[in-house]
Length: 90
Image (cartoon, rainbow, N blue to C red; front, side, top):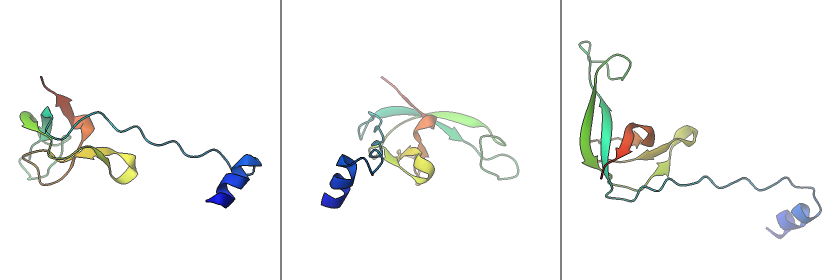
């Protein structure tokens, strides 16, 4: 750690990577979840099946998954869902 600080002071080390900004969505937040439904061929996906808006709430605070996508667990899903499919309800 001291070595990294020394290198940074001498200008030999690039800037520190920025911390990702955590979305402001607490655990237990009431949300609408745009859930993808199965199509006739039992293939899950928004491209092939329909979508349903479900009233639910978050079971966890947001966290970063693969490829730096923000995810959260919601009631009604065993898998984490992208925050892009959630909308806060009042």
